[in-house]
Amino acid sequence: MSSAATMDKYILSKHAAEQQKVRSIPDEWIQRTMNKPDSIMNEADAHGNTHYICTIIEFGSRKLRVVVNPHTTPNTIVTLFFDRRLR
Image 1 (cartoon, one colour):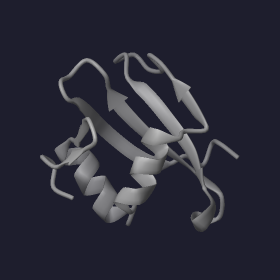
Image 2 (cartoon, helix red, strand yellow):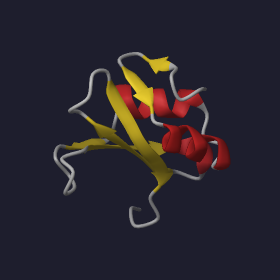
Image 3 (spheres, helix red, strand yellow):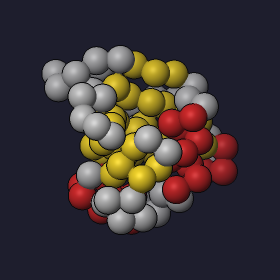
Image 4 (cartoon, helix red, strand yellow):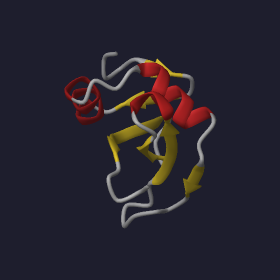
C-alpha cells in the first residue's frame, strides 16, 4: 500500500507505509484493528494521537497497535507495530 492510499477514511504516512512493509503487516490486519479494535485509547500520547489495539490471532495472538493522528483530514496512520508490552 502506498503512503497516499486510503484505507476507508485513513491514509498511511510515509513512515507507517515503510513500517508496514518492513514488519510484513497485511492491509487486512490494519483494517481489522481500525474497524474492530480490542481497545481505543484517545489522546494516548503527547501528540494527541489515538491508539487502536487489536489481537492478531494469526500472528501468535500478538497485539497490533495502530497510532492515528485524528487532527488531519483524512486521519493519518502515523505508525503501527506489534506492542511487546501488551499481553
